[in-house]
Image (cartoon, rainbow, N blue to C red):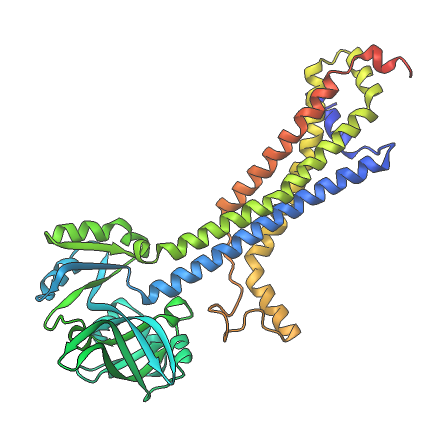
Amino acid sequence: MLKPVPLFIGLRYVAARRRQQFISFINGFSLLGMALGVFALIVVASVMNGFDRELKTRILSVVPHGFIEREGGLVDWETPARQLEAQPHVEATSPFVNGYALLSAHGSSHGAQFQGVEPQALRKVSTVGEHMVMGNLDLLEPRSYGVVLGRILAHQLNVIPGDSVILTLPEVSVTPAGIFPRTKRFTVAGVFSVGAQVDQNLALINIEDAARLTRMTGKVQGLQLRFDDMDNALGLVSVYADELGEGFQGEDWGDSQGSLFQAVKMEKTVVTLMLMIIVAVAAFNIVSALVLMVADKRSDIAVLRTLGLTSRQIMAVFVIQGSAIGIIGAFAGAVLGIVIAMNLTEMVTWIESVVGVKIFDPRVFFVSYLPSEFRVGDAVVVLTAAICMSLLATIFPAWRAAQIEPAEALRYE
């Protein structure tokens, strides 16, 4: 016989046949529910991780990892640029001038952020030049008043390279004839497609043209930074800005794009909590199964007590039985979930090829496939939560079993 005795009896009760088939059904349903809940949690968490990775990779390949600005602008921007490039983890810098405007064409108008850039320097901090679907980034020459638009923004304005776009600034010009909004006609020089949010709200123009529009002629607003690792930018941008001197301010991608990634993180948390209800339901089923089991085994409990088992050992028997159901279900669901999560992208691609239907239409969605990134930490958290719920679910029925008096239980046997 296995030692200790409660472990041996508890495991025997897990596999033993019941006089009541209903108890076996509830036990099986509890195990299946636990496995399903853990499986769903691991797969969904992996998909959310995949979307988070895709967003960071796509957006931060185009949007610089950090910005350093100076109030009033920079005239001699080359000097701070050299200082920044000498700092640890900084790979490149590029000057910029930012602004917001209303873009209009063919009767359609959409708000967007325009960014004045120097094309050659921009290629060092952004991969937007590698994502051109029409036109060329190098066409953004000084005084050419050309503009490169994101794919969705160009589609909303119904323009292609060679078409004209009216850029209206949120300012007015006072003339003898009256007050008029400040506008400028630009020619579409190209269209880029990254597959992220910037496709619908970013327009690139030459930095000299942007300086004239924002009345910063001869100056730049600041410098864009690219780090060897995006995570190194968090916190370091502000430090490097302070080292440049008074008046410099730094902003990393966590500040500029943080709300988007926080929304993704919050969505993952909410979905995880909702799916955890499945695990909780399975745990409640364990309670029901153990309550019925205790009622079914009253005479066995009485015999065990007369043989010398203490109430604590009786309690341990049913804790082991109930938790074993939850643990077996949790590990079964975890194994299946890990296998599916690690191969989900390939499986969905194969299903799409067989069925002939795209789940994510690239014309509608930023991501044209189902991304998945399995993380061991997520699986550990899910398994720990499932096992803890299983253990907690056994406490009350096991305590009830320990309170059974042998004489009462055997009176009518």
